[in-house]
Length: 278
Image (cartoon, rainbow, N blue to C red; front, side, top):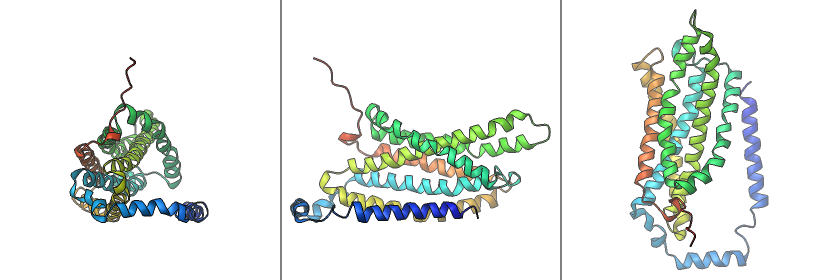
């Protein structure tokens, strides 16, 4: 069964995380000395002050942008394997399970590619602007992905030039790697945006709200994605529905970018300007 090994790997990672939580983090909240500062801070800041951000535009928009990023990430996890596995005759790319596994594993280099990009981008253009442009750039990338199904169909046609088959997998790899890179930047910088939107005494509450909204978005994403796939395949049979699905995902990322730009900038979201020598 091709799904058994990935599921076992997920179980092992989750078990290791649970074991680490109990063994390595068990002392983080214990002890009178460690609890005293936290208790004093909790007494000094009332509930009204801690939830005061709910009346402010910036934190709510930051939480909304983070939830929208999570929504798109779930849609991506559902739509891309479906596109890769769907036969060419039905508008997909028609890859085998082995080809999909190899391609997805190779494209995960985009996850690591975002690591060296995050710090320089945050210093030069600011974390908020980097997050907005990471979402804006996903729009053309998402729209380009279903176009590769046309390249695949043309490459399999009789008399098609061999170059179409040769460039198919490299382009598909680059597109998926770019999505992984921009998506990872959006996830990490989205957390930074949420944390920068409130003062330190409100961090716990705003993170709770953002995680609750993201969980709600992740729950609705399969429902909305399934409806979009079903309706688009009925309205545009023969593979046209794939373009609707990815255009919808691109539209969501574009709207997320505008929500990010609407967040009032915080002190840590601006680019770092080097000090002039005197």
